[in-house]
Picture 1 (tube, rainbow, N blue to C red):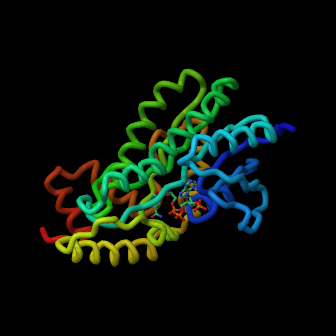
Picture 2: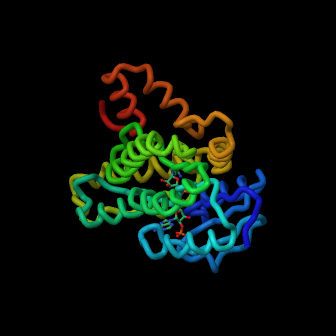
Length: 271
Ligand SMILES: NC(=O)c1ccc[n+]([C@@H]2O[C@H](COP(=O)([O-])OP(=O)(O)OC[C@H]3O[C@@H](n4cnc5c(N)ncnc54)[C@H](OP(=O)(O)O)[C@@H]3O)[C@@H](O)[C@H]2O)c1
């Protein structure tokens, strides 16, 4: 069976931004495939077909793609949204733990992208929307491994976009600031905590809880993603939410030394 409807494939659609995006793309007329590691437990959403997918597994990605292409025939839009945060000082993370985080946030994006690209190239069109973050272009102390993954996603996306543009495909970035989702509760805690960072970690934990609970609704990001999926003239980067917009504007104009002070103040660190 195939469909004439536009098809969107959203990773990490079981919660937060991914779920809101699946709902918004379905409302915009897409047939949506939403993925997560265990989707059988979910309440069905109108216009969304759930498929199991673990972005850290080549086999899982291949199996999900085969299922979707067999059923719907094509994919117009891929939203690489699945991701996890990190809590702790950089020095407190083992390399093996950091590799696991990269496996989700960076190699997960690359795996899914590589699996979808041949199908998009064969049709000469498609859009890949990678959910980065404010942390994709500015520093965030006490979440360094996460920040490193999002900076990696930015570099990968912007380079890939140039390679596939002549095949009718665009690779676009959406950069949310703090959004009210269960992200903090799902974040990976450093596996080798050190007493000297305990106070900094506590400060970070309080700050992220406060920033996320007062952050924008995930529907705000979903709206930006739908725009990225449907715009006639796509924009390479789009911030999502009030904090990301404000900090992006300051980052563009502030001298490096002043911006450094903004980051320390924003993170309640001594100047
Ligand atoms: N919330 C924010 O403030 C914020 C800000 C900037 C950027 N972001 C980014 O937005 C994206 C979504 O975050 P969120 O806030 O919506 O967090 P969330 O509610 O924790 O959602 C994370 C999603 O990722 C999926 N996921 C995690 N590990 C996976 C894996 N190995 N394979 C497949 N799916 C996996 C989860 O699905 P299952 O657990 O069901 O598998 C879930 O659907 C992330 O990339 C995050 O970095 C969030």
